[in-house]
Structure formats: structure tokens, C-alpha cells
Length: 356
Image (cartoon, rainbow, N blue to C red):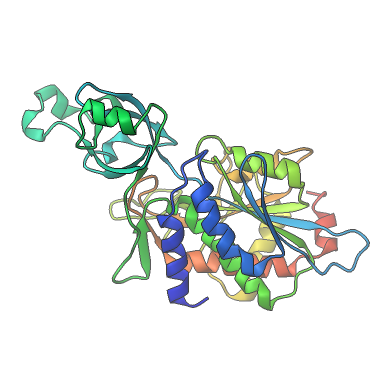
């Protein structure tokens, strides 16, 4: 894929709607994008999209590698229709209410309805209200409808997505928009599949676009239990350095994907990812991660008897907002590194994973 195609892939994935538990629209995009590179695609009972590509293993028993990135996104859910016609709501996934006032949204009722998240104008705030950040109970969605109209179109439980079209920035090879966590990881899987067209690989490959990660790693838990791969690599985002933010555990945009190390990640797999990066001359960053991570990697590692797992992360600014920002080269090189890694593993490497 060239740079234009890579940017277009991310724009399409980001623009699709797929809140946790309702990922059908984005799954259709992922399926269409993966179809040219795999032999079979299906959805499992929970909704994970799985694409399979057979390897060229010459041994008596095939072995498998799963590459996993979640396709769900954060959003909102309607909880009540007020007498005024305004909608009260709660979060689907981790959302900071400070980022919400003034956001345009789409309410997925009988049809898709445009709305905005309103709050009191600053002129009308009390002194106490000015001192504190807005909470969910202070906010509402305004559809420009009265209660009767709203009740005809919307009901409690309807989902609300952010109306934030993705933008490829004018300079810096960057893109910003909603749901780059983790549509960028899904894009990396597709870039990997495209690169593997020109490479031989021994492992049977599962490309998994998982569901419901933002509400509890549920899709990865179900997929890994069902597929039982011999090893896996999860792909997600991590915190990127931004103006005014230079803390431990944040990483430079444009300096390559991040390889995590710690109890969640098999050390041999971590070393092989580093070796693959050196051999392919990809710049990478390293993350010391001794805690329980909030990514699909944790759910995969503890599935069944345990699955050797690694994690590649794409540095991302402004996580869980509608202006998440990343460097397109980091995303593309994550996919290319996955392809180099997949092409380099063999049966002897997999057999050695049982020994830490």
C-alpha cells in the first residue's frame, strides 16, 4: 500500500460506526478490506470478525498465529427523554465528560438523527459550577425536537456515536479523528495481510477484529478461547507525547510502534518482535509494563491453559476523545512489522515458547 492508500484506509475505518456491542457496520468495512488477502472470513457468536490465511508449514501438525485488534469504539447511550425533548445519556466505554460539551453527535434511533451535546452557557453558571468540571448529569443531547417528536424517534437504550469525521493533517504525516483507538490497529492488520501477499509464512494466520474491548476485553476472550492459537500478538494504541505532556509511559509519535515487555508478554515473543524490527530496519520503542494491561493481550494470555502473547502499540495523542491523533508511518510500520514477524516464525520457535 502507498501512503495515499494507507491514509484512505484509516479514514474509512475511523468513519465507520461501531460502538461496543454494535459493531456490524465497521465489521462490514473490515471484511471488505481483508477479503482480497485471505481465504475465509466469518463472524463468531459474539461478533468478532475472523479472517483466515493458510500457512506453508511442512510439518505434520500446522501451527497458528493470531493477530488481534479491537474494532469497537467508545460512545454514548440514551437513558431518558426529558420533558423538554432533550436526551440524557451515559457512557459506553471510558469517556471523560469534560470533553463532551459542544460535541456533534449522531443518535441511532429509528433513523440516524443529528444532534449536539449541550450544557449551560458559561454566562449562566453559578460560582460553584464554574469551579468544577461538568458531570454526565449536567449534560444533554439536543435534537431540536420537543418531547413528542423525540419519543417518536428515540427510545432508552439507543446508541449515540460521535459525529467527528477523520482528518488527514496538512503536515507531519498525521491523522486525527474518533475511534483511532483502535481502528488504527485494525488498519495495521490489513496492512500486514497486504504485505504478506509477497512473503511466505509457515504459520496459519488468524486476523481478528475483536468486539467489546472498551467494555471489558470480551471479544478477545471469546476469540482466543475458540481459536486456541499457538501464539498471538495484540495490536492497540498507547499514550503519545503531546504538547505539555512528557511523562513516563508516553511515547513519541513518528518513532515507530511500541513493543511491551512484562508479565503479560512472553519474553521469547518479545525478543523475536525486536529481532524482526532490527532485521527489517524498523524503528521501535520499548515499554516496561509490569501491571495488568487494559488491552486484548491480557484476555488472550489467560485463555484456556495460557497463550503466549505479545503487544504492539501505536502512539496516540488525546486518547478517548474525538480528536485522537497518530502518525501514519507508525501505523503502517506496525503492519509491516507484523508481516515480518509472521513470515519469520517456524515450528521450532513455537515449540520453544513453552519454556520461559
